[in-house]
Image 1 (cartoon, rainbow, N blue to C red):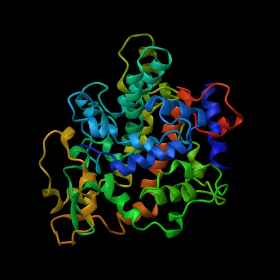
Image 2: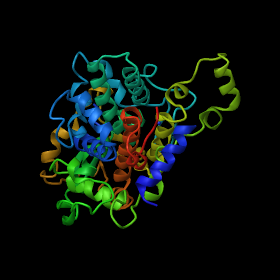
Image 3: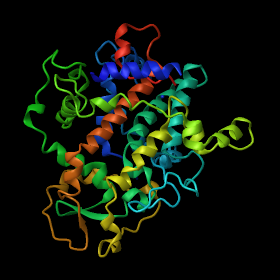
Image 4: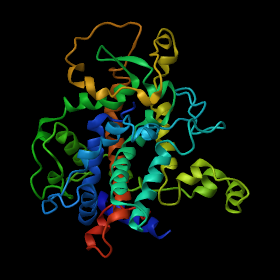
Length: 405
C-alpha cells in the first residue's frame, strides 16, 4: 500500500469521528520541506499568501516553507517575542532519563501553565482556526503559521521533551573525538555527519515522473537536498520500492480515544461535569490533534533507545556537567557547525564518546532521525491541509495527509 493512499484512508476515517534550537536550522528546514511536499496545491497557495501577501504567487511553488522554519529561534530573544522562549520544549518534574522517564508523572510539568511546546502547538492551531473564523488579523496569522512550522519540528526532537540538564545542553560528551553536548549532538551533528555520507546518486535530481509524489520543485538546491531525496525515496517509499516507514506512516496522524485511554473514565466524567479542572493534557489533545499523545510516544525514546546514554550517570562521565543559567538562553549550536568537523580530534578520557557503533551506529542504522523528521513533516502537513485546503478541491486531495482541526 503506497503512503499517499494509506494516509488518505486514515484521514477520512478520523475526520468523520489532528536555547534550544531543535534539529538546528537544517533539521527544521528538512521538516518544513517534507511537509510542503505533502500539501495540497490550494493549501500551499493559501499558506504562502499568508506568509508573503501578493509576492510572486504566480510561480510554482509560490514559496518555500523552509525559509521561515527557523524564524521562531531567530526572534525568541527579542523583546517582542521573549515570551515564546519557553515554548520550544517541555519538561516533566522528576523526569530523569535514561533511568526514569516520566511524561508527566505525579508532580506534573515544569514551568507556567501551557507555556511549553505541547501547549504552543495547540494554541497556534487554535489561533489559525480563529483567523479563518475572522477573529485575528493577518499579521497574527503570519506569526502563528511560522510558529506552528517550527514547534512541530521542536516537538519531534526527543531532548526537547525532557528538562533534565536543560534538554541535554548540560551533558558534555564527545563526537568523533570533538567536545560537544548531548543536545547539540541531536540538534545538528548527527544530521551534519549524515550529509557527508549520503550516496552520490541522491545528489542528482529525480527525473520528472519517477516518483509517486512531486518532489523536485519543493527543493531549493541546498546542501540537504540529497538528504531529503533519500528520506523520501528509501523512507517514505515515493519510488518503486516500499519505504522503510511506509507501513507505519499512515498511523502518524492517529490520536487515541483520550477519555478512557489516558485519564480514566471517572476523571473524564468529572471533567465533563465541571467537577474538576481539565488537566493540561486534556486541554492540549482532542480526537484529531493530540500533541501530548504524540509527544508521550516520542519522549519514550529518551529511555528506550536510549537517546540519553545510561553511561552518563556513571563515573567518570557523571562529573562532567556544564553549568549554565536559564534554559531559554542556551546557545544556538548551528553557529559552530562549519568548523566542528574541521577541528582535529583530541583525547578526552573523562567524556563519553558517542560516535560509536553502539550509539550513533544504532541511530543511523535504524534511521531514527530520518523517521522523526518525516513524522514531523507528515503531521505538519496534515494540520495545514486540514486548516487551509480549499473546500471542494479535486480528487487528488484524498491522497494527502489531512487533520480536520
